Amino acid sequence: MMQSIFEQYGWENATAVPLTQGLINQTFELHSLQGDFILQNINTQVFKDPFAIDHNINAIGQYYNTNRPNQLFTHLVPNLAGETLMEWDGKYYRAFKKIDGIALDVLTTALQAKAAAHQFGQFTASLIEFPIAALKLTIPQFHDLALRYHQFEQALIHGDANRMTEAKDAILFLQSHHTYVKQWLHFTGHQDAHLRVTHHDTKISNVLFKDDAAICVIDLDTTMPGYFISDVGDMCRTYLCPVNEACQDLNQIKVLPERWTAIQEGYLEAMGESLTSFEKDHFKFSGQCIIYMQALRFLTDFLELDKYYRVERPGQNLDRTNNQIQLLKVFNQL
Ligand code: GN1
Ligand code: MG
Image 1 (cartoon, helix red, strand yellow):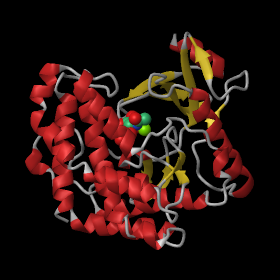
Image 2 (spheres, rainbow, N blue to C red; image 1 turned 45 degrees about the vertical axis):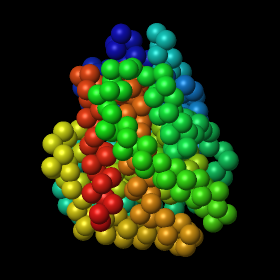
Image 3 (cartoon, rainbow, N blue to C red; image 1 turned 135 degrees about the horizontal axis):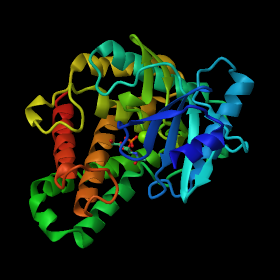
Image 4 (spheres, rainbow, N blue to C red; image 1 turned 180 degrees about the vertical axis):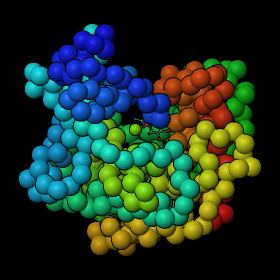
């Protein structure tokens, strides 16, 4: 199976090591006589139109080739037939040239938070002149908080009854914080909130590091038009706390103020000139909005019997939800 895929790319003596960081796609690090690559099987339950992703990554890659030839970027690698997205046995595969760098699971220093925030800000800033309408929506309404709340409400109607009882406290907490949805609608409806090229998954493992320097953003599957709230919010969700969303010990969930400062400094250094003052006024709301949204999404999936996020055990999506709720509580005390 794998061997036939290697042949389509012309990779000889290839070996594949699975990488386990992502919750959605299946990823392998590939070593071959032709070099090192990243091979991914796209989860088409989540990404219903893999050609949209292929289109977006190639469009940005071509823009960089023309306008910023030295920009480090996860360019797609074509197979021998010249395709950057390949169907094989009913599944979709694509390959990237491996960029030399390290994907961290958890941050350890404020310096890393600043460097990563700067790199994601730089990504959007580098594409300010890019014709945003050329990007396809790889997941329509992906970060639409009103939709995510609606899906949560649907899960409360159609979801698993036992799990609803088990998740009672989490449900009540999320219902009682519905005001974030109103704030989101106010933000998106305002004339000073702008759509830009947005990554939509700025967790720390999606930026490569070399020592303390963040060198390149990766995982562009959800790169599409969006609001800065999505990127800054996911940084708050994943950079501020010494432990990640997998941690079940709620006592370990804290936010480190120096990292909050670091996110602001790093992102604004790159994007400060582009953001409107209305947007800057929503910097903290970004964190609230995205942490809240992630809690909604994990809980919705728990109630729907884990259709979306990969789990190793039945209660895992509820544990993830409680982790995010605790994070939101400590973030609000900042
Ligand atoms: C998913 O697969 P991964 O880890 O890159 C999800 C993100 C969530 C994240 C939570 C397409 O990303 O939105 O924040 O899990 N991506 C999609 O771990 O749903
Ligand atoms: Mg991702």
